[in-house]
Length: 494
Image 1 (cartoon, helix red, strand yellow):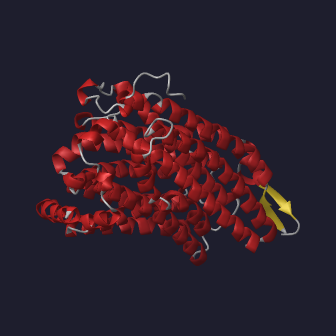
Image 2 (cartoon, helix red, strand yellow; image 1 turned 60 degrees about the vertical axis):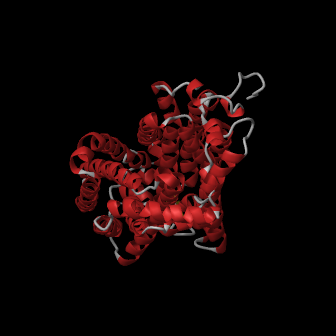
């Protein structure tokens, strides 16, 4: 998009005052949320379809599947670099929008490339077993997912910065709430649409199996899988890219306050990494909360790589049916977040609300285990709804608590650190889920026992998180942090 024929942009005119810039309206807030809706759809394709196909249909080891997919989380430190790049170096005349669009082109394209590598991995596994060639394809897949994660960071980090740029303090929380909610809506919509696209008899159950004389057993017909799943990874990413364009088109030009703010105050991103680390370790409570956040995140997301295979291997569900498992979870999460903000937090407080969410989630994992032993799909769907509800309560409570444990003097450093720690913890959770499932399959002959091991570890983790939560003391942080941080920043200036 050429910028020469566009009216003057506040980004290129530091003299434009904050008062002269229009305020973000509700319609534009929902339009921005379309980008997050797209990210929800993409997460469904990677964690809801690819992992199911690899573990259940292609019989790739759960640990290898989880490790490859988790690579897109482990490159999360690049978010810091992309954020600073979008601050310092405008691209095609924009600080944020161009990065968002280029990143979206890349991650939607790479997702299709990742699927093609999955087919090569599955084919190699069928013909040569766990040979050097098969492990090589697994390594290539891990590299592809690392590239996917970098593209995602290049797009999502400038987008998050854009949310700050286009809002003021009094309407920012409303925008964040809308955008985050649309992420969950994207997961639900993606689950519905993808399940419809995947709902074909030829890729369900025994219709996928063919006889292989060399192996003297039945193997999955990869060609049938390709014919159905390849179009999904063309149609859905194309929709996601369209949503990215629609979400951000013209928003930065009209609403951004970036240049005006950066000309009025010193940029916090000038703080060095060493200074940031000293800031984050200046208070004991920061470490306590980091431990809580780490255990909590791992305990919530360990099932990311195993839930759909659980539906396939234990309940005999088709790929389209396991994709729908995300629907009750997404709806429950939305209800949990909304109800917590209005009902629980004002009455119970942040720590008590988060504790209730953690204990409820632990109970839900027990119910998910019971659904497997009773082979009851209705109990599984109900358990996932209540798990989503509990996750929504945890998200609202823990996020509010996180803001209390964020020093205003270095808010960006703290928020960036919390976000980075959560991203790394999610990657670790994905790998840990695959590793525990791998171990369970080695120890137990019954699939339900192997999967139950994962959910049992999650339930125990939730109880540990509750114990860590009671060691968090917001008053201690607020009393000691300001003096310690001011001392560090003063020494840096000297």
